[in-house]
Length: 342
Image 1 (cartoon, rainbow, N blue to C red):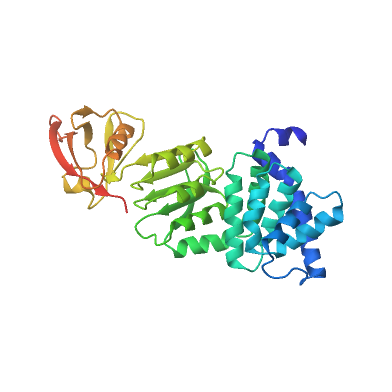
Image 2: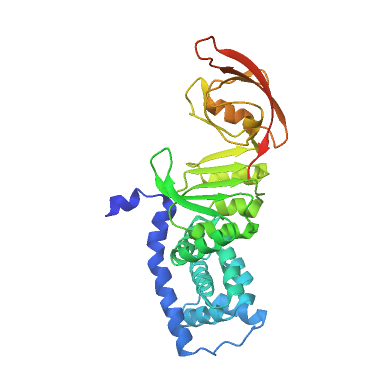
């Protein structure tokens, strides 16, 4: 059993080791709340919250347990002091503080649960590896029971969710955000509650730092397409660092509207979408793209790279070769005004 565990990534190993402790403390918290549901007054003063936090590291087990239950019942006023206490480096306080946030996460107060969840997400992205692992394990456990509701919410906001394969043969969920998306940046957080997401495409939907951070929590994702999102260099660098094994395709947003076979030369167009920029310019299926703005195009991958550097409404000069039945192929030039992703 041990060799299999040791072969997993560090954070997943930590999650498996920490999860039993998560459950154990959760059971104790629930038991304590059932025994004495009104023991903690609403909105206790800051001094009392600070005293309870100090008691999380008390020598007496009973004191630690009492302080844990009191803080779990204290509400939103306890969250920021707990987050600050986690940064002090005391593992006992940190582990209990994470479990208190987990208890708040599962409560009936929606605003409190959202605040606790965001705090745990921040901790999961932090530099303190043990704390990050505890926070990530807590979120993972919570998200296991939230997948169906998250999918329904995302689809109601316009996300297109389907199941299928990638070119690698991997099967899983494909999620696309386009012009039909009516959600906000914070709604991207729902993605981490879904199971088996392997591909996310964001087409023409602005991405800020918070949305990029949500994408960075998609463990196991293989491909992310960011077309016309306006993502900044900083969030993109962070996303790339968090998902080193994912292929992240970033384009400025211009759309030609053609298909072809990647990495196989020459660049033969196997599809021209009806009504696309390419179709409007008279480009046809079977045409071979030779150059864009005078630069040679070796294959379809090169074509998409060149087009990806341009935005909607920009013009490119394409030189193509078209076969003629019974005659010599003809070379011709076309000026194409690029469309946008929707």
